[in-house]
Amino acid sequence: MPVIFAKAPGKIILFGEHAVVYDQPAIAIPVHKVKATARVIPNLEGQPGEVRIQAADIQLDAALSDLAEDHPLAIAARMGLKAASVDRPPSFTLQISSTIPISAGMGSSAAIAIAIIRALADFFGVPLSVDKISSLAYEVEKFQHGTPSGIDNNVIAHQQPVFFVRNQPIETLTIEQPTHWVIADSGEKTPTRETVSDVRKLYDSDPTTCGDHFRQIGEITRNARESLIKGEITRLGQLMDQNQRLLESIGVSSPTLEHLIIAAKDAGAVGAKLSGGGRGGNIIALSTADNMERIETALLNAGGQRVITTILNKGRR
Image 1 (spheres, rainbow, N blue to C red):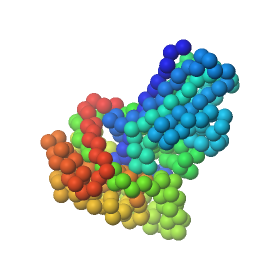
Image 2: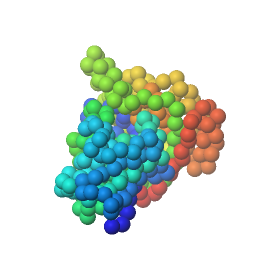
Image 3: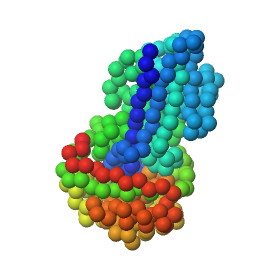
């Protein structure tokens, strides 16, 4: 039996984080420069049902049966086996690796789950639709993030830019003009579950004010949809700055993130904002085609731990 592997990209949210949990739209794009990879390696000498999971990034090398029921890798593996209708598989080793920063708003957990589920489905020759893979990954996400929006698993499974509204059909976007983006990791790690929980507490304590902030973010996101498709970077930059101010108002920014945002703007970024759960993780800056290197250098000099550039190309859907 051959070795089977599957990959899944990272993602970055451009607009709408947090508000998307409250039924407002969000826009996200895949980031193909980083990815999660899952390999299924047959063990011809093993006994049926013997499954080993190895993830060198987290120093894990254990039998699936020894992992806790709520271990995210075990959950993804068991869901993949269930989806393939396999109760007692032939012995194999599942190797997982990822270049996606953890707890940085780039969809690491969803990408790993999707890579695992795809690899297992391919290994057992069971075709799964993109929507099915996405829904299985969403179930894994629930264990890690409590009440995830669903945007991570959708944009990563489809590997396309998406306009996403919770509990509505996903809309992939056809890009007419390219846009250029610079992503900087602040080095601060705050679990998404924590910021989502704190925003929920804020909403429960003042639903009128917080709900108004979410509605404004939703309107910004709807306006950004057409500007992204058409490559209207001046308008996009203005909308990013407005979105950032609203994210600051709900308490999910941080001094480090704001320092990086200022550095990007001083280097000529058209707009910049945090991306993802906040209080750490990434900022994303919109650049002109000829200014990406300058912004990248400025962000590294300002303390960015890692900087990734990506282009959302014309015709991407």
